[in-house]
Amino acid sequence: MPALVLLGAQWGDEGKGKATDLLGGSVDYVVRYQGGNNAGHTVVVGDQKYALHLLPSGILSPGCTPVIGNGVVVDPSVLFSELSGLNERGVDTSKLLISGNAHIITPYNVTVDKVTERFLGKRKIGTTGRGIGPTYADKINRVGIRVQDLYDESILTQKVEAALDVKNQMLTKLYNRRAIAVDQVVEELLGYADKLAPYVADTVLVLNQALDDDKVVLFEGGQGTLLDIDHGTYPFVTSSNPTAGGACTGAGVGPTKISRVIGILKAYTTRVGAGPFPTELFDEDGEALRRIGGERGVTTGRDRRCGWFDAVIARYATRVNGLTDFFLTKLDVLTGWEQIPVCVAYEIDGKRVEELPYSQSDFHHAKPVYEMLPGWSEDISKAKSFSELPKNAQAYVKALEEMSGAPISAIGVGPGRDETIEINSFL
Image (cartoon, rainbow, N blue to C red):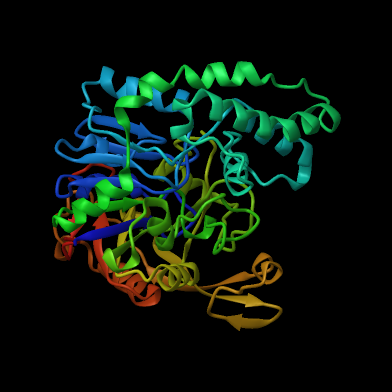
């Protein structure tokens, strides 16, 4: 039962797409288990760059079956736009499977997301405005629309009516917006039914049977550990569980079937949106990391906030996910610094703290305690083995490994599929 979970060990944007794609040729299924089109993956294949938002990265690997699990929220318009874009570039998308239990992002979910964020003003969370949070809220409030509901017009209409009873009161009386018509929403959603039908499946059954048949299944998380609704920097988080436990609930596979949990770590740290970020840089170094690393959100288009590597959150990610391995990405971006600071602890109210504080207030006031590591100037993008890296780059990787609490089994030295040093096989 070779089931692997691959997830972000920071605040997302660590390079999960590249890692998934790297493994894609060796696995039979790649499964998105949470999130929606608020997550973006960039995958470079040869001279082609692909930006994926909702689809699993495995869709680019011939022979691999991509799966959207029950824990994902799906915007049909985004889904078909993404599928169309890939088809136009010659990518076969016919093997995609979508759980009938995945929830649909409706037009009113998007509207509520945008007007609520504007209403919050300075207190805004920094959402992508794509309806993700309101859709998950509907799911928990049991007024959500699932993919399977598109095939029963009566049930669909009842559910849309139930959802809009409250939302229209809020939109008209609180936000001074126009009410949304039930029949208009139902008509739009029913328009997707026939197009979705070839992809809809009982993915829980499919995946468990695959594992029983010794197929290799890779579970791909969106966002990152520090954006987890339970274990992240709440309230500046996403609305689902990108951590390893989310793979079980979001795909319907028991924890005893997970054999390996791989955390993706960037060689420095980035974050998009609001929220605390102890190592964030506001100087020339921060701007250099942003420029050299091409740090702009795949989905949002927003510049990412940049800072030095934070070993405290890496250790936290190891603990809450039960990580067995790390994939360290973008090591090449650090080429050229004489010395590279690494955050090894925080200072909070004059005290040294080496583990992530559970208090939101403490984390907000945490100041990084840095250890300086020697840098390197050599081009590392052509390195094919760990021994080919400059000595200082090797020492940097080993230091991060020791501080983070799990072995670094692969290193990204460039954006391309082939610009990766594999130290230990993930399979």
